[in-house]
Length: 147
Image (tube, rainbow, N blue to C red; front, side):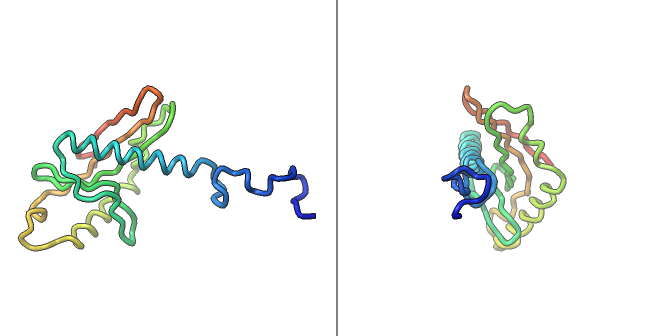
């Protein structure tokens, strides 16, 4: 009487990869996203960027990376894909996501504005970094001034 009709014994929901989410592999996708963000940050640092913030959160969402380079304060969206896929991760940054990132950047700037601080003289810029986690090793593609 304890098990659902039609379900083999021992499979009362515990067989899912992420019990409770209903979406197997969600934890793997999150781990891949975190790895992609770490790779993107290292990539930017090697190119001379200074990472200002990682995973900046506010009531409206999250910005993956905020960095400075020269005269720019760069808001970076990182998109990561695993395995072999023909889908370019950068294509996931659609018009709706761009609008959201602009709003998040405005929130960040308003919250961190201090008159006379050197950061306030930086020009905002929006970049996208696409990371492909492939068996042959990760590939990072940086699209400066993406929108």
